[in-house]
Length: 370
Ligand code: AOF
Ligand code: ZN
Image (cartoon, rainbow, N blue to C red; front, side, top):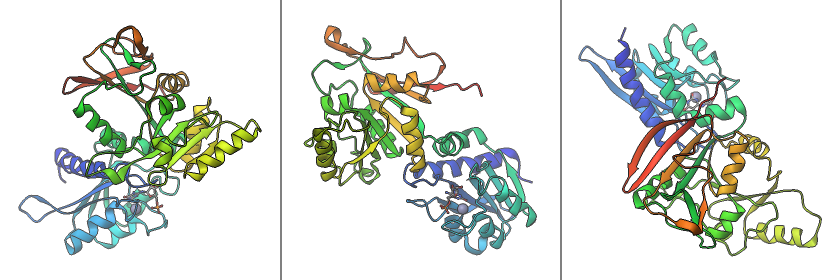
């Protein structure tokens, strides 16, 4: 039997592959699969794949297609338990069995009620050796969005804030204020590409007129769904969000109509630009998150502003905080951030600090006790 470090080495490769399509596989998790065989000269990768963009084919199918007959007697490394259900594609467990795979190494078991242990059972019944829990923690992190949606019926929520050295997120009445430099901005655009949806409050949508798309040449097609919490339907028709809604979807979350003609006119005008208007209590983010999960949204990036950040924090609905701190001070006219490096909400644990040019990025994870 191959030793554990060898298993870990190939699982690292499967996890790297899984990351490539994060946010690009619709409601399906992005899974990585590596097929390895050893003909006496040491282990060699003979096939590998990531879940295809859009969610299908699954990773195993892709990797087996590359390996062809070399899959017979080989080991398959998968970041998620191979599926056992007849969904839009036949079960991956059957495909691995049919290809003659001898051993399957898994990072995380699949909480999907159609799979959940049955994938491993099918493999074992066919005489395949199954090892699970290899780099499970890393696998859980890679699959955090999918796992959160399946286990808690809500997306994994990341709150991103950029604050000045004196703890401000902007200047009153000044629209977008550049707090971080180009390297940090590029990181955020990559993060957007890996995320299913991005959310701002109407205050930010009006003050900053953001586009919230991915603007990196290789990833432009990976812009997430854009969401605005807008209780009174005040999103301007001429805003960049509304004007680009046919290209990259925009969802406006509003409360019940006040019954006025003006409200329904605003709704009609927004819908005419291609914006989708959904009714969901704008002050109850938990309900919104459930509704998003039902649509298959597994990860949400909350990008602004102070009030929206506070709303999600107050409800205990933030899983990770990404806090950028820029070098300049904004002074008296600044809009204070609900948090900064010296004031982190209870329950969050600092996990790392990264540097992007002159900016710092601190990451904090919410430590759930259960
Ligand atoms: C795998 N390999 O690469 C992925 C899996 O809608 P379907 O039929 O595509 O099934 C979706 C489910 O398949 C999803 O909830 C999860 O259980 C599994 N995803 N499984 O064996 C893969 N992406
Ligand atoms: Zn599958």
